[in-house]
Length: 566
Ligand SMILES: *[C@@H]1O[C@H](CO)[C@@H](O)[C@H](O)[C@H]1NC(C)=O
Ligand SMILES: *[C@@H]1O[C@H](CO)[C@@H](O)[C@H](O)[C@H]1NC(C)=O
Ligand SMILES: *[C@@H]1O[C@H](CO)[C@@H](O)[C@H](O)[C@H]1NC(C)=O
Ligand SMILES: *[C@@H]1O[C@H](CO)[C@@H](O)[C@H](O)[C@H]1NC(C)=O
Ligand SMILES: *[C@@H]1O[C@H](CO)[C@@H](O)[C@H](O)[C@H]1NC(C)=O
Ligand SMILES: *[C@@H]1O[C@H](CO)[C@@H](O)[C@H](O)[C@H]1NC(C)=O
View 1 (cartoon, helix red, strand yellow):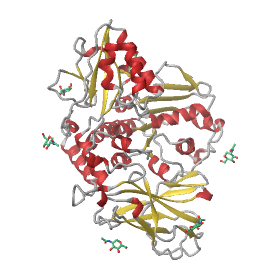
View 2 (cartoon, helix red, strand yellow):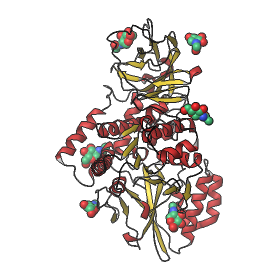
View 3 (cartoon, rainbow, N blue to C red):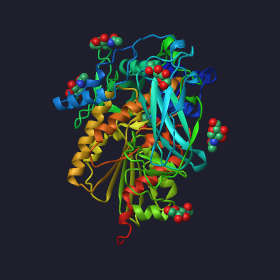
């Protein structure tokens, strides 16, 4: 989630012994050294120097982690049924042949799309695009499973909308776009991963769910030790500290420190990322500029003209895909029915938030909303908790207007730099501590830190959050709950293995299904990043954040309430 760290962990034990000289040596010998790493390194080193005892640090071992998903409470019969339904609904097409050589895998450069006989296109209609995937030999692919995303856009109008891709399972795909504005529209089609790469990601997700690992610092008096932590750990190596949450049953474990007690845990942080996850064969499917996030070009026309809707609407027009919104002149227009308002001055925002308590829970992508509001509303004064930067918890208030804004990160697994063990709270437990009501707004974003785990882990977490949401809505039905979906991000060969959009898309489908029908509003960050012209980024740029915040505030202060007194 945070900046990608080089693998300094193997040096940890050695460093403890040889101290500063070793650090200097490391700086000159490690390639991708950055400032953040250096400061983390100093922190680690200082904490080592403050004790006489050498901390032991264990590297994760090769391990079959497939049992991990069900560690913790067994799901009930109904939960197990839902889980199997959800897993089925996101099942990815399996290629009929495994182990295809690279030359027979999908090559976006030789694949193409063609716009289906457009006829006369009008606003209200749809555009259909056929895609034919080819391999590096230029031959048509015979199986599906490539991960493609698409958008339709008009740069001059700063307009864009996501498309929906249908996989025919034979190397052909069809993409549907709704036509929502008049003008010349062009198609953008991107292969995020080949089907062959997706197979590798699936293997990693099930077998290497410890490829991001965590650690905790234990301290008592002058003694301190650091051990490895995760959702599950091989038991045989060493005794465990069991930090399973008593309220939810969410599992979390650390290796027990040699000298110290499990009760002496001080904080939690990201340990690092495993290396050498792929075989030489597998790594061929993860090449920047070759088969990660590569555009697919058109055969024939790449743009078509959409006319304004005619008086006589085409009857029986059945749209295959209804997006959650689209951009027009840079502004998001949601299709959920909420009227989008522009909160373009701090006074308009404070007017809207007057009397509200806004609670944000989750990862750094919901923290962006907090940061946006703090930056744009000078009346919101931050309370200094002396929290670590980018970790929180955070709080800001405008006591004149009785506005409260809070942010707190979700419970482990979380790849933040350093979370105090006292601040490791699960969202569901936090929700249980809210009274709720029409003055309460809850915003949740939880997805990115789950990308390396089997989907069952995410389902279990969402199940707990959903139960707490239902309890909260039962206590106070007027509570507004907004849930942010996953978004697309920049990928390279390495980050693909940990943060691929493919993992995010799988989790996102589960999130949408699990909260369907509940009185919660989704903020569709997936479509908002896909439809936008800005390159994909884990933390979307201000243009997108401002649209998200406008959307959120439009839910908090809908137009129809505008004329009320106050
Ligand atoms: C992982 O363990 C399970 C159960 O012990 C076993 O069925 C499976 O084949 C193992 N997978 C690998 C890749 O070793
Ligand atoms: C894929 O589409 C092309 C063009 O429409 C067609 O010629 C081809 O037969 C299709 N392939 C399969 C396997 O159906
Ligand atoms: C951890 O603790 C939980 C609840 O306290 C218990 O159900 C679970 O079996 C324990 N797990 C291990 C591996 O000790
Ligand atoms: C439409 O595409 C053609 C090439 O296919 C290009 O020459 C033309 O400039 C494009 N028009 C717009 C408005 O993008
Ligand atoms: C803010 O938005 C309103 C429309 O909602 C517009 O009339 C006004 O000019 C905008 N103000 C600024 C400063 O952009
Ligand atoms: C953990 O806590 C200690 C003591 O409060 C602090 O010095 C350190 O920076 C924290 N973070 C890490 C990663 O150890």
